[in-house]
Amino acid sequence: MLATSTTSVPSIDVRGLSKSYRNGVVRKTRKSVLRDVSLQVPRPMTVAIMGQNGVGKSTFLKVLAGLLEPDCGSVRIGAKQPTDALIGYVPQDNPVMPWLRAIDDIALPLQVAGIRRAERHERVRELVSRFRFDIPLETRGHALSGGQRQVVNLCRALATPRPPDMILLDEPWSSLDVGRRLELANHLHVIRKELDVPICLSTHQVDLAVYVADLVVFFKENPVTVGPEDIISVSLPTPRDVSLMRSQEFLDQVASLEERLQEGTRR
Ligand SMILES: Nc1ncnc2c1ncn2[C@@H]1O[C@H](COP(=O)(O)OP(=O)(O)OP(=O)(O)O)[C@@H](O)[C@H]1O
Ligand SMILES: [Mg+2]
Image (cartoon, rainbow, N blue to C red; front, side, top):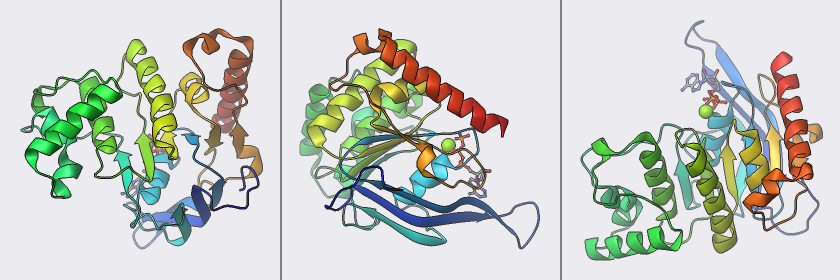
């Protein structure tokens, strides 16, 4: 579905995407999760995918990340296939290596790219200070709290050897307290502006989705199909700051999206 018309290459271009899994209950059958999903995001934007548990949000993000092969359809990040693009991906479960210090865990993409240790550390410290992340870099993974693991995962997604082509975040606010959720939302504004790459995230947080996103996409049924009515442009001014969250237009958009989500759940 075309979000807005454009003549240049879309920043995210999904066409006729279907994905099913082998059914663990009835042998030799498959469970269809995404069916003929199309989504064109014309320029780098923040896209929030919303929908009830188990609808297919993580599956969609994994296909965008090139971690899952679609049954059919095509995905392009700019002009690239997902497997050729450099993608910063934060999985839903925020994995960390228990034995690694946070600084070395964040630096893993740089290590894989063959960058020396001293330079890796320098780049991570620069990244953390540039985006003003609050993270104990010397603490090992086993001693990090859930919220700290979430920040480590976001930093690792940004610590690519060259700027990423896209950032994917699977429920980025799930382990954070209220203050840190807002902090992360503001980080996402800065990341979008500084890196100028598309950000696609899944979330159940309607207010934060409205606060950070340019587009909200509803995954409302199983299997997921996406029609024009499922793509909502967030018509709020940018740049956005926290005072916007108290405005009537913000509260109206949140109320209208909540209603849509509840309709989806009742179906
Ligand atoms: N590896 C797998 N094998 C079989 N079925 C799977 C697999 N991964 C996910 N599923 C099924 O696919 C459907 C979509 O799962 P997915 O994780 O994409 O949902 P989600 O929208 O991210 O849910 P949540 O909000 O709970 O994270 C679910 O019914 C799930 O049980
Ligand atoms: Mg999920």
